[in-house]
Image 1 (tube, rainbow, N blue to C red):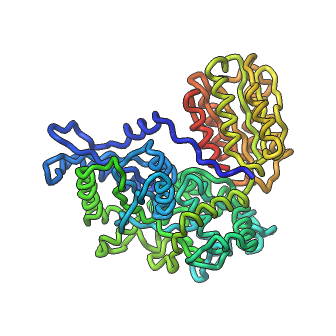
Image 2 (cartoon, rainbow, N blue to C red):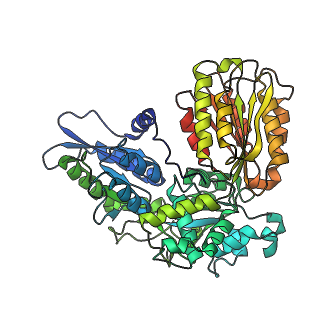
Amino acid sequence: MKKIPWFQIIVFISILMLLTSSCSGIQKVAGKKVTVQIVYGSEKQEWLEPLVSQFNQSMTKTSTGEIIVVEAIPMGSIESAREIVNQTLTPTVWSPASSIYIPVINAEWRKTHSDDIVKGSLNDLVLSPVVIAMWKPMAEALGYPDKPIGWADISQLAISEEGWSAYGYPEWGAFKFGHTHPMYSNSGIVSIIAEAYAGANKTRGLTLDDLKNPALRSFMQEVESSIIHYGESTGFFAARLFERGPSYLSAAVLYENLVVAQQSKVLANEVQQIDIVAIYPKEGTFWSNHPYAILEAPWVTAEQREAAQIFEKFLLDRPQQELAVKLGFRPSPAAPDIPLTAPLDAQHGVDIKQPQTVLEIPSAEVIASIQQLWTEVKKPVDLVVVVDTSGSMGGKKITSARVSLNQFIDMLYDRDRIEVITFSSDIITLSPMSELGSKREELTRRVSGIIEGGDTRLYDAVLLAYRELEENGDPKHIRAVVVLSDGNDTASESTLQDVLDALESNTEEGGNAPKLFTIAYGDDADKQVLTELAEITGGKQYSSEPETIIEIYKKIATFF
């Protein structure tokens, strides 16, 4: 089996872009200043970003008279931990979505250092339980709000041949579930740890021996079998769930504050959607507790530490905590006198008496083993990759396309099935749909020999790929097409409407229908068409240059 890859570090230019976009409120400061860089889980961006601006405008000073300037960078918690360990990111403060990954970052840091990088008792900035967000009618079919619902119910729904028919609702079809990729996202890793605890029938003390139990493995595999796809962002899942409705997703692992935010829009008639509620798994869940960790790192100075402590106090003050409640968060335990008032109520789909059971954070070794187990039981993908090899792909474009495609293939797992198609004046199947493990070396060799030349039969190639997936793809797998093109269609017999009609043919499958992910490769690519093709399926369109294409492939890989 393919070993879990630690994916490459985000290119330097992406960090510069994040810095440029995240330093709101920073003014030209006369005199001495001290800069505090905070890398934080993007789940709290709506709360934190205006507070950074407000704090910077206040020109707050340290005890020695230095003006404090805060730079805040939103980033995935697991991704930022890896960058900090590799020292390609050197913030003063790390505030991930939860404490789940702290044992892992400390274990990785100790491989090259003598002590932990995160130490001591940390303040939590805001709280939000990790929940299963479910459409209220569906939750009621399972017994909500009187009957506790949990991972066991998800498992039974996932493997049921009847789907929602077993509960008297055949019109709802199959149960469709979603959580993010546990190698990238906090809510994803929380999901699989919670699944492991439920499979072991434990709430604490999860061990490596527990993970060897075939019953636990089977339980996780059952839950994962209902996944429509994975993803890098909890926010992306929330958007897809709320926009596309119950035909696309029955439920997804989110944070309680996202349920509150959606219900606030429903109650204000800002969106026309049925009610959503938060399910607090009866077997237990975790807090998304947003710890504030001033790093024990050689790049953090005494001045930065003092400044970071001053900013922390500001965030924990009553006005800032009251703002958090308005946005659907629960206040920090460091601000215990903040009342849990609306919108933290049943009308907004939540229960402030929950969660009743909070799971214990396992050791770094156990977390890593759960991730490894997930790779063995996760839902495989049937993937058709479609690559433009027309004449306009010459030079740097084709070179980068070859290298990045092989890197993308290396991110996939042996049980995944893949087909590769190239298109120019001709459409050629380099490798038919089959398991990757047995052909990885051969496929890498074939991709390394791709050359450019000819016209652009984009529509014909996409149509062929989609039909191949319909005919040869396993409906019990995630099914997807990834298309890279650098120009407009110039030679297809099919029309754009022919392709759109084919893509719409599986809409009755909702979230289980094949997804299309498109990459507009360079300035001449037809972004409008590629966006239309992706969005009609529930996929996503990306734009890339040769220098950044591998980063786009990494983002797409998180869906599988």
